[in-house]
Amino acid sequence: MSDFPKLIPAFTALQGSLRSEPSYPIAVDAVFVSGADFIRGDPSGTHVRLQVDALLRDGPTGAAIRLSYTGTIKTAGTGAGKVFAGAADARTTEFGDGFMHATFETGHPDLAGMETKVYVGAGRFILEQGKPVVVEYKISEVAV
Image (cartoon, rainbow, N blue to C red; front, top):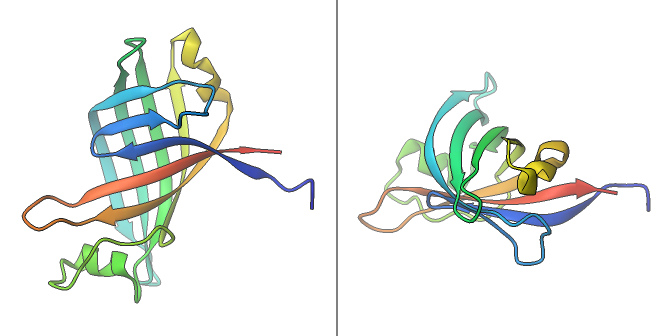
């Protein structure tokens, strides 16, 4: 079992920001500048597939960071399905219905390590009365 990959907590993406975990060696404190997403229903009707591209600006370094990710979210019989359907009884979801694989590009030497690592994440939706739906991801580096 020792040859299986492990996850190292790296970043939290929440409400327009991407921040490193305190113990992660690559320090990022970035805000989303712009982005585009494409969400399509899976033919099975049980999942949606995500494709997201975003541009971020890191505060400490001033560096531009490109974040790209693909993922799947289980919608059949889940809280995430209720969020996508706009159901009146939709609530904040737990992590576990949605997962993603992220890649990063940047030209700054302090952040260059992000470009060569493999990252995966788990997401959830946060719902608060009278506010837009917020997406949160916990992103981890995959390592051995």
